[in-house]
Every structure is written in structure tokens, then in C-alpha cells.
Image (cartoon, rainbow, N blue to C red):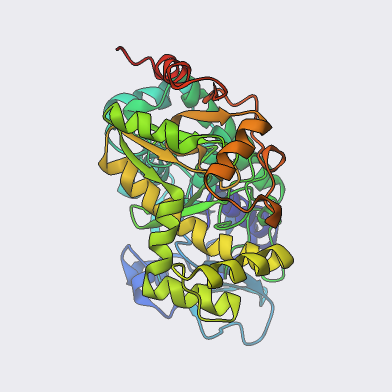
Amino acid sequence: MPELPEVETVINILRPLIKGKTINHVEVFHDRLIQSDLPLFKTALIGKTFLDITRYGKFIFLHLSDDLVIITHLRMEGKFRYTTSSEPRIKHTSCLFDFTDGSHLAFDDTRKFGLMYLTNENDYKDVKMIAKLGVEANKVEEKDLATIIKKIHSNKVIKELLLDQSIMAGIGNIYADETLYASKIHPLTRGKDITDDKIVDITKNAKVILDKAIELGGSTIHSFHPSEGVDGRFQEVLMCYGREGDICPNCGTKFHKIFVGGRGTTFCPNCQIDHDLEKAIGVTGPIGSGKSTVLSYLKDKGYIVASADEIVHELYREIHIKKKISRIFGFEFDIDNKALTEKARQIMIANPSTKKMVEDYIYPQVEQKIELLVRQNPKVAIEVPLLFKAHYEYFFKKILVVQVSESSQLRNLNNRNENIASGKKLNADFHYDKDNKKIVLIDNNGDLNHLHKQIDEALKIEE
């Protein structure tokens, strides 16, 4: 659906084309388009001249002589089309204004959801559909938005609030996603949980994004075009909307997509953290560092514990996943067959593209399992060897990174009968963001008492 920038683009294109044009005849081919008296609409406009075109939110106002005003909304796919053709009507034309100079203004609407309503200069702002609109999204003030979002609609989620035209007029799905991404707010955050600083971010970013979109002629998405032969360019710089599966340019996480109020919603889970999920304890570190020992201690402390490796193994046993992985490898894969798992490992070492295909398929499956585990358990700890590579940081309030010397690491691997010479790397294979405030380094070079004391201190567990 065209939003504020697209509608602004439409009126800027249309104004010089029809201003000063006088209507000779009006034809309506889809009666439901006209929300006011249909016979009056057809007759009252004859002989009237277009004086100006203005806008509020997503609504367009066509101002005519004798103080008449047509309120119109493009809805999903409505388009105005100015033409001098001798056959101006096309398949989806819902309404046609014929001008005295032989030119025409058509309203084409594939979905037939658009509307027009005839009123006058004195009353058009009081028509119900206009009177209920909130302040325009690129003009809203922080204090007003804070009152509406945090007090009046405190239990609604922010994505729904941004789409509510009675709160802010002009924002739709595209610019709601873009504004929330720029403001680093999860779309399911409730109004009451939006901080004052985030209210400032919303108002600031909405203005910047909408103004930039207007400058670039809006976004041409799917079948919407502001005018025949004219495309907007803002879709070329969209940061978030419609980019499910693409990589977030800020943190490298893949964009996710959920549905909020029936609307597809794209977001980055690590930049736009859902704080209801950010409650688990993460355990990670290089191979042979002692992650399982840490996890075992947390289990003794009353945590529900899980291992991402175990989750992966369980997933590989599911029939539909096993079939998908088998197609990727080109042979019948079985996670419980050591020879086949080694064959698969060698294929991934030799073919990075195959490894990426496997990871791109299995990581989201693991992610779903972890999310379910975290949502269902208030006190959970999860060992994730590839936590940072998979960008699962957003599940955890604290991440315990277990560190160990290479000599201890080798000893641990030998005790596990790991074939170290088979291509496994040690600490060089493990990287993390040292500036991540969630990270707590755990030194596992001492005895168990030393290890447990560090964990207790990190989690502030009282003995």
C-alpha cells in the first residue's frame, strides 16, 4: 500500500498535470469506489476546475472550484494516470475524468480497494475518515508520542502502534519496519516498555526516513508505481523491509520475518532484541575448553540445560530434515553412522559452498528449538559452540566464554579420543566480539573450585 512518501510523490507528479483543468464529463466504472452519493458525484463535478492537490497522511485531497473537495485514498494498488489518448480507459480503470481540452485523468485500481468521497472545503477535515487521523508521522513530537504509546496504548506492540493511523498518519508496513530497525526496537515490544530515549529515536528516525523517501520519490514495491513511467528509488536503499534471509549490515545476523497483526514484519534479532527472550545463559568456547563441565555445574545449580550439538543431532534424525541434508550431500545421510558423518564432514571441509548450504538450512531449525526452550523455561543454560558464528547472542543475558590453554585443550581432546590430526583447529578457530558486554570470560586452567567460583561470580549466584 502506498505510504506517506509515495502519496507525496503522486501529488507532486499530478499537480502540474491537472491544475487548471476543467472537467467536461465523469464516468464511474466501479460504483464502490465512490463512498459519497454516486449520482451527485457524477453531476456536481461537471464544469468544475482543479485548483490544487494536497495530502494528509495517506489521503489525497483534490481541491476544485466552487469549494468542492474530493477525498481519495489509493489503498492497495490505486493509481492516477493522466493521458491524452483518444481511448483513455484501460482494463482496470475505475473512474475517468474527461477534461474540456481533450485530456483525461483516470483512476486505475487492480484490486478495487481505492475510494473517493465528494465533500467541500468547509467540511472535508471533519469527515470521519480524516478527523480520526493522528499527527503526520514526519511531524510528530516526542512528548505527544510518548503519551499515546506509553499510556493510552501501553499494552499494544510497537509495530501495531506505528501502523495505527489514529496515532501517526502516513506510516505503513515499509516505513514501520525501517523506523524500528533504525531505532533498534523489536517489533513486539509493548508500548509500556518503550523508553523515553527510544521514543526520541522513533520520532527522529521516522522523520529522517520519510523525508529521505520523499526526496527519492518513494518506494516502488511490487505493482505500485506513482505514475506511469515513473518509479521511486527509495527501495534501492531500504535497510530492512523485505530483506528476510539477507545479512544485517550492522551485525551480520540474518534478517528474520514474523507476522504482527497479519502484516509481514522484517527485523534483525540482534539489533532489535526481544528482551522477553534475552534471559538464558549461554556457554561457548573453543573445542576442548570444558564447556560441558560448565554446563554440568549450571545443571547442579537448578538450570534447565541443553546443548546445541544435541539439538542438531535430534534434528538430523527427523525424517524431512534427514532427506533435505541427504539431497545436499548427494548420499543417504545418517547422523548415527560414524562412517557417513565423517564422509559428510570431509565433503564440507573440501566444499565450503556445501557447508554453507547445510548451515543455512540447519541454523534456523536450531534457532527455533532454542527459542522454544528459552520461552518455556525461566532458568535455562545452553551450550552453543558456534554461538557467535550463528549470531544467537540475542537469546542470552550473559554468555560464558570458556578459555583454556592449548596444552589443557589438547589433554582434554586426547581424553575424549578426538582425532586432532584430522583437520580440527584449536583456539584459532574461535572468535568473539571482545566489546560485547554480555560476555564473561571463564578461565578453565585451574581446578573445579576455581571454575565454580568464577561461574558463581559471573552469575551472582549466592551459595
